[in-house]
Length: 104
Image (tube, rainbow, N blue to C red; front, side, top):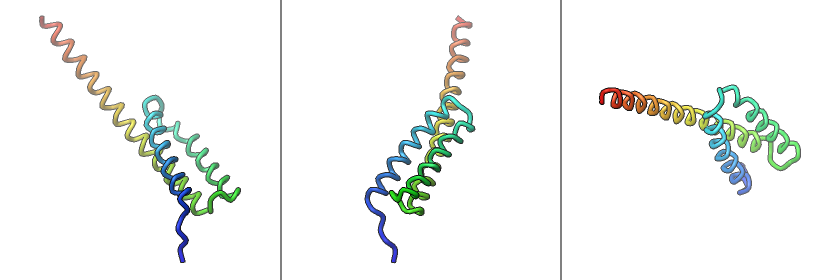
């Protein structure tokens, strides 16, 4: 029989995933994709530590780490997309502004 997860595990997964999503999008605004390696390693170490201490079962800790890592990467992709759109709009506005002022 499968035991239900305690509420604390669900809350921890949701909180860590949300923070990872935001962290990934913030990192995308400034750095290349290689910046994701240190946070991923920290999440894996935290999951192993939680499993060793007994705060979470190994499967639960692995699931929490996998969700956090996936959220970090999704956040990075969203951040890259937002950065691209902002740069595209900035370039477009500078082209329009330059053509408007040079013709007058």
